Length: 166
Image (cartoon, rainbow, N blue to C red; front, side, top):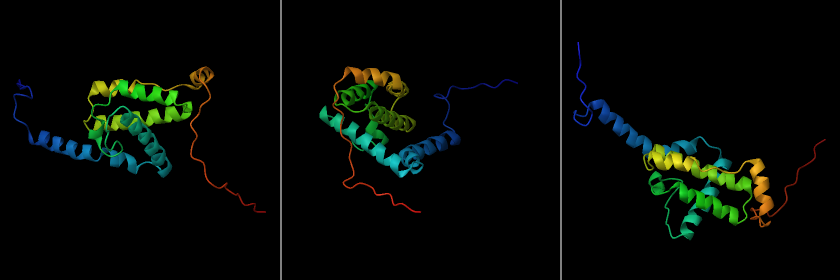
């Protein structure tokens, strides 16, 4: 018994294929929300800051990026070169390597979500994923070669008192 398999572009679309496409569309529209529901408030706050830095960077080169934390389509056109330029800009602005690495990790995570939603193609996603941060050992060497111009982080206006209980 032989069964002839017709290539999918010549065959009629099955009900399962239609259901799968509809499910993918719905899932893609909620991929950021689903990811963010699983994250702690402090993680989301840090990621919001990282995405704001990326948005500011894009604006500085004349690109209106849209809602990077909420809309996968806002990631269309992001390339590994843009992500690499962002990394270099943070380095030149004096950001600590740990902060730079965290921001890079956030950008790569949201780019992966945008890929999952269909906003980035496989090549763009893989190349963005290949942009690397700095290891602890590399960070020391980089810091030795640059002037100490660290960006100040937001500080609390009042110190925190820790009560003593005996």
